[in-house]
Image 1 (cartoon, rainbow, N blue to C red):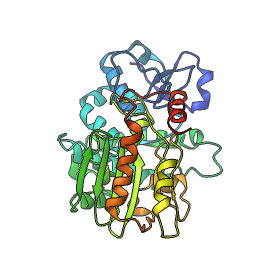
Image 2 (image 1 turned 90 degrees about the vertical axis):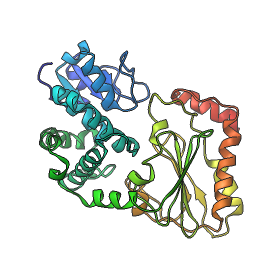
Image 3 (image 1 turned 135 degrees about the horizontal axis):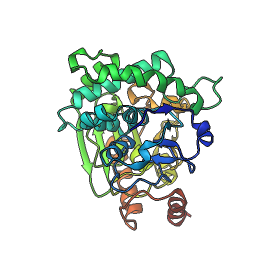
Amino acid sequence: MQNKKFIPFYDIRKYPDDVLVVDAHHPEAFDLSHWRGAAVPDNCEADTSTEVVLKAIKNNLAELSRTYVTNNHYDIDGFLGVWALFNPDIAIQRYDLLVEMAQIGDFREINFENPNWKKALKLVCWLNEEEAQLFYPPFGAPEIAEKEMEASVPKYLHFLEAFTEQINLVIDEIPSTEEYEIVSEHLNKKINKETLSDIRLHIVQAEQPLHYYALYSESSSSDIVMSIYSNNRYELEFKYTTWVNTTRMHYPRIGLDKLCDQLNAVETSGKKWEAEHFTDTAPILRLKGKKLSKKERFQSPCFRPIYPSSIKADEFKNICIEYFQHYYKGLEKGETLDWKEVRRINRELFE
């Protein structure tokens, strides 16, 4: 595999038939991605873009001879896929570690059966801290940057070198971070969890709001997470797993407007329930207070305000469960559908 060069996403057309796109999609390049619309190469199907790349390397895909690599954004999964193309031999040696990191970074899930999970978590937290301190956090691109695809380029150039120095360290040598300490603490908290497999809903009950990596840690068999905290504080969120293509069989996303209506009909706190459109990367159903930016919504629940509801926990839980049971009963689990089909399904359900 020849030496690679990272280029900005908007330069793809300068190098026809010589560009690999990781964790994104472009019709004039070769995609290695779990994004909707990106054709996954045969025998490379996986849940994360990182594993798509790793399988392509293992299969010695001819297209990997292309010179240029790009992405239209920076995140853990996208970066690790790019890094693997630059370092294929080390990447294959660290296959399980990289896949675990990608699933923590993209889906916030932890596979506690993976012997590398603690190292993966520590590396992800290190990447997050370095990104925020040296550049900007996810969805926090400076206004002077025209687009994330431009502002993210320096991140790739930096981490392609810096991460290589970290991955071969033993876990105790990897710099610890405040985030890693928070997640480790939250993983040890008293948390009640249950999964309703018929509607792929994961319910987590804890005293105080959690870091996402603890909240979602055991949610790999679910696509929706309901969190219930003390003082009648609740959130419900569609996971990113239903925004991208995965190997998991799941229900198509459905709108949450009618669920908000049901909750608002019994809410007496003076606040209103709201949720983003189902096409958002991760819609959150929550009591409306201070409007959250995309950057704030991406941050963990323990870092944002969650308002007390007048609705008791069991009632909130039952209203939500019955909502999904009702609207899913005529639907089948399957692969990720394109948005046109998801919109059609929602029109038939709600109009």
